[in-house]
Amino acid sequence: MEMIPIDIDKNLGEQFSYQINESQSQYPVLDPVKNKEVYAYVENIRNQLINSDKIKYKDQFPYTVKIIQDDNTLNAFCVAGGYIYVYTGLIKYVDSESELAGVIAHEIAHAENRHTVKQLAESYGTGVLISLIFGSDFRDLINIGQQLLSLKFSRGDEKEADEYAVEYLYDTPYDPRGVGGFFKKLIKEEKDHNHIPDFLSTHPASQDRIDDINSKWKELGSKEGDTSTEKHREIVKLLNIQK
Ligand SMILES: [Zn+2]
Image 1: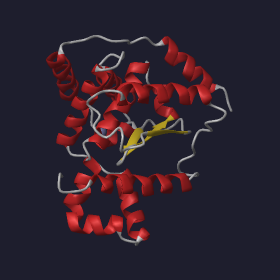
Image 2 (image 1 turned 90 degrees about the vertical axis):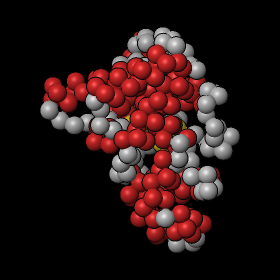
Image 3 (image 1 turned 180 degrees about the vertical axis):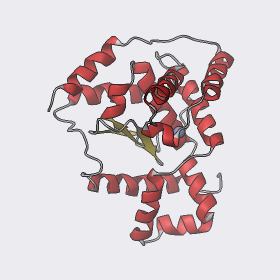
């Protein structure tokens, strides 16, 4: 990966975020002007996380936040090069700010560890990847873009993203086990309703995964953090007022 310049991630992210902006029907962005408090809330979580010393690319990646207005989709993702997208369905689903921070931290970890570019390099080869991204054939890139969203990371990459999420959270006021709490809730959901939420189709949750998150937390020193739910409930209330 050291051989692949970080500009690849940045360029890919720029083009990809442009495509998302152009697809308002598929990715309807929640109006930032009418939903200032909700954006401020999620952006504050982002700020807390990227303040961690463990974030390597805070000066190179923009780490912009967009909220997708779709209550039926329980998902969040962070495109290569640091563009964060959070669905209203996810915000309404989680119980606390620390759980939401956990999911965002996990997604940031995918960008920081360059998992998308790593996978593309494995599929297309480094040479092809570089020529595609710095070349002029935008259409090829759109095809890659379609694949990116359904991209499934390897188990190893997921584990890595979970562990980094705990590390980033450790440097914030949030409880570092936030992402584990979210997975716990998802597993229960799957059992109770016998359907698989979107996040689970790309992020298989298991007790092993929660155990790994807890071991990482213990390894770092078992610091407990904020798990309060009040502020989060207020934000969900605001989201429920039709704007
Ligand atoms: Zn993941």
